[in-house]
Length: 485
Image (tube, rainbow, N blue to C red):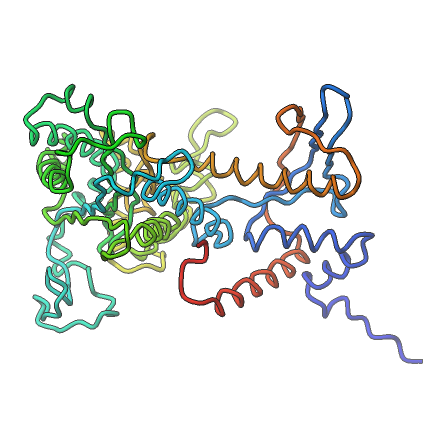
């Protein structure tokens, strides 16, 4: 008699785990929990409970415990803003950023509609040159022959790489990236000073008559240097609810940006490399933002542009998206043994690198910037910069997006609104079920959660892959436009 075929060693672990999940008492709940994550690539596994009670009646309005789930744990999104790490969560972050920027341009929550009439500019600030690079166009964007003698195509991998790597100032490039955030902060200070000088008044008098609000996002150029795109707006002394004085015009803002670009500088002193001056490049742009859509830059276009780059990392420069620092030894190359002496780290063999720089799948120009950042990070005068930790970012360690307090609402407020909307929907469902509704402001919520791990079970990963496929299919058939509009 022939034995039945044993398929346990033929079926993949993922499919085997999916079959196990399908045999649970509530497989539909497993599917729903994965669908609610919208394709998150590395969800957080939690164990715990949440109980919401009405203090007046002591009634438990809502309760949840992760043990009620078929798998005994709660899956929640990772919340990573980077599209290279989690496209699903980055879409949510991009949508929130879009509404945050647009609220400061066309009005919205906590921002008056009258800001449409305020002078508003879209400003681009760039890094200086650290050596000639291969180019396919001139400064006006017109095709031209490169200084190397060739006419490069737009997709030529040598574009934006040094013509002569031996003379390229890699140290200056990395230090510029490392101090770009500080240079931006100094620019905002000098912008206010430049405005006061332009109007012939003291800064105190300027602050009493005019408020400057801004939001900015960082973007990597192909040459490996960050540059900033910023939305700058003039308001009255009380903020967005009051109009700026008539003399605070767009032309005044453009002139002040030019002065601030010239004067904002940082000086770095080092025994190893000497004195360096960190400053902006001479090329910058100040464009008006159109309120009625009759200009090149409208509210929606600017908000979409900023939102797109808020989810980027350093992919535009061709670098890797993970730190090169060996985590067991924190990049030091050694660990303390039982005798408290320094022992060579077995994970990195004393290099401090999670992956050898020479083995990275990157272009030579990027590899040299990473190698320079790693080396500078181990100099005593640059120790506080922790450049070995940010070597994969080519030295940049600032926030990709930020804003002044008075520009518009906050990401936290937007998420609170979304959370409140979900509570209203839950209350409506409670009413449809015949249960009494409650006022959310009077409820008391008690929670206790413990982190378990990150990632899916093999079977859940198959379900998540199907969710991602469905989302990608829907996006392909959408008409052109931003998905969060």
